Image 1 (cartoon, rainbow, N blue to C red):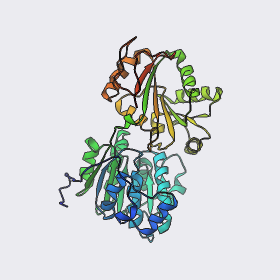
Image 2: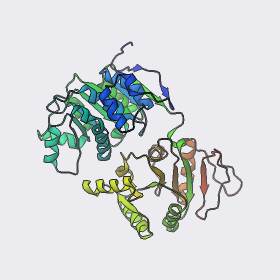
Image 3: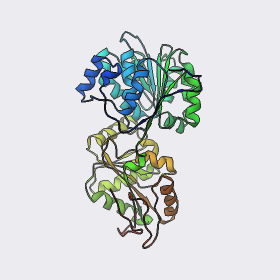
Image 4: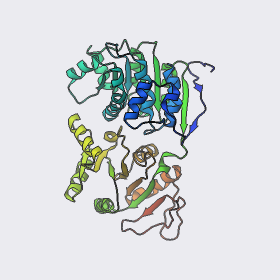
Length: 413
């Protein structure tokens, strides 16, 4: 394989999903780790894992383009666990994530295989006691951290990063979208220059690409090309209503038909609390999730949602970032997202792992025009009209609040 300059990653042939699952051992994964995965009924690789494992195990810098929920965590967790000996006295591997929730989920994935090497895994994020967290992190070989709290610990001299030999940026594009570029750059500048660096992101252009160019050396690029875009994995419905009837329409939608976990997005924390309270009063097992909650309260709420004890979660955009569950059957945009990218991120929370899913967006009359254009840009083309205007996309339906179709169309499978 020909190596290139720092700014020109080695290009591997993209792999299109779906792909035949392959056993981990074929990529050089140690038998003890293969056995640990088998104990969790994980016996074959997902496409991003099949692409990345060989290079990551060889210690090469890796740039991987793959969406959330594609199995990327094990693509970097396996090489990290296999590469460490267990004799390291402090942090040797650092994984940066944009949110506390994602940090927790990544740490859980690591713990599922880290025990075979007697490796300790610690999380570092805000909202919890700093001293106990720092004490645990300083004695762990693997740290999964959000940028702000990590800088805080290092600045207080409660944690050292001078022995880190491998660093991973997980959800790099989302991290930069949330304004973490200065913090991420600062952290990467603290690390030893001789290290393995890996970046996993839904996109590798723009700021993410510039960051990769600066902090990786001769990286190998792997890209999963989706057979269908994220939004095509779900059915999309846009329901028009007026402001006074909006909550009633939501209640009717939740009460109709079979569903699993439902994630509802609101624009503000106050709206999240109000909608969750209204749904509780209507007999739904609903809870709110937003930034004003303490970390223990957030963790309890997410645990209840994941277990199904609360099957409706009403969340703000920021609070739901990092939420990565396979059993969300419906996403409801109680308040529409600001742009196409936010819509795709929200839609990506459902229709995962080959399951069906539905995205419902509640629109006030003055929002219909903007969302018609959004649908067209995302190739969910729909023309709004009063009678016989056809619906171009077979997977999008616009309905009025009373249930009558404003534009006629057929769903074709």
